[in-house]
Image (cartoon, rainbow, N blue to C red):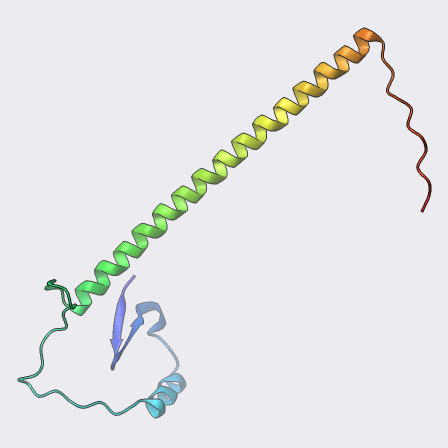
Length: 121
C-alpha cells in the first residue's frame, strides 16, 4: 500500500490512474491555496516528537494496516476452524446418542409411541 500526492490531496496509488475528466472536475472544484515561500517550506512532521516525513509516516501506516489485516484474517480463520471443529464434535455426539438410543430400543423391544394424527389445516 502506498499513497501518492496529487496537489494538496493524498490518494492511494491504485486510485492515482483516473480519467482526465475526473481531473478536470477536481480542478474546477479546488480551492485556491497560498504558495509557501522558500523560507517557509519544510518537510511535514507529525505533531508528536517524531521526525518522520509525511511519506514515511504514511508508508509506516500502510505497513501497520497490512499487518493488522493479516492478523485479523488469521484470527478469523482460526475462529472459523474452531467453530467447524466444535460443530463436527456435536454432530458426532448426536449420532452416538442416536445409535445408543436405537440399541436400547432394540434391546428392550420398545416400539415408538403412536402419535395422534395431525389435523389438516
